[in-house]
Length: 549
Ligand code: ACM
Image (tube, rainbow, N blue to C red):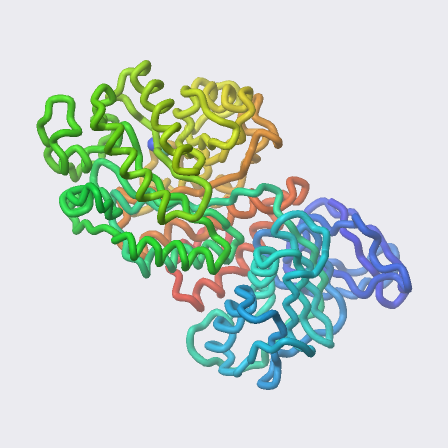
């Protein structure tokens, strides 16, 4: 690993090679006189990572920066610091979403007014900065004079604000007024994502979660630069979205949940509220109605959707693979046309997800015909089809997105679909269950969750590369990553948080940070720095002994 260290006293640049990254700080003082750090120079793997003491090049000045997750493309600690005070202003264009988000966050904990103004100094957020960085990229610099976030889009500025947030004291995350000081140490960051899709999936079908719970889940994930929120809205145990042309779906199909727990559903207005909430965080909602299997709730709501015309009994168990829409009936396609039309109308994002996994009660030729047909309906309403990797058995368009989930690697059985999808030119989202599923137990003793794919401690969640997992699926075949959480065993917000934290940030970092920065030792110490932030927000996270000692 190469770390660039500018030895402040000698005013020249030293390159220090370190073999492991431990401790809590990375070093760097001002750049060499006149030259600045060369473009392309990268302090890879930095963040909370590196403790530099004396180096061969002279007296390195150790300047510590807090751990940032995901680790930025480059981060250099510099001299100086900026203190946010009662007279600090946020300088941004009117209605800048990144500025509003930051102001809202900091007004609560600092108690300062932090007005958003059009010009001057302070915390400057420039969303039209002409940085030339890739999509979502930003530059963040902190010096004694102020804080500057420059990006070429509101999205980039918002990602930069999430980084700035992690440079502040953890108490900045509190929702009530705290005592200062509010000092941000000098730093220069340049950052942009490795992959364009970094998702979190929440299953509200097995157990239902309210709008405010879903919003909290989105907000926490957005803090780690997650930019897609995949909402699993329909399964055997519950149908969770109002469809006006088929009202019994929600009214009857929405009543149930696993274990006889209380069900529920979102009205379209509530769903639109979630979409808007996500949009304010530059997060795109991907709604999923699983088909043709995982459909007992719909089959219980409407007898005519069943091949035998008889309504199914509501289901509150946790088996899979027993239900199927009747792929040979025309009503099935009229039904899906209505569902897709209504969902497309309230979903600004590019994807509608029709599941497609574990359709063990649908014959394979029927499955392929079904998926090819419903794919066209999704396209008719202006969306691309997303689904689990099984959908790759149908002919898909280049913009359609299969999601790899099977806990297999290399050329093992179960990798064929992902490999064939890549061969057809499709770009996959990678969510291997044995690394990325947040409902897998951390240890055998974890009270919640399942273990069918693996026991997934934090190190295992972090220990994979989406471009190396499956033979024949390389960097260019990958659209990104996703961390799904299935809720058979989860009933409360605390349950969700306990299983998602600290693993969700592991998947987020794999999706965002450069491949070359991947280091468990670095990640672990930066992740540990998140603990006080979660505590400040009352996040019920798992104190993994691998991370928190
Ligand atoms: C899945 O876990 N059945 C996608």
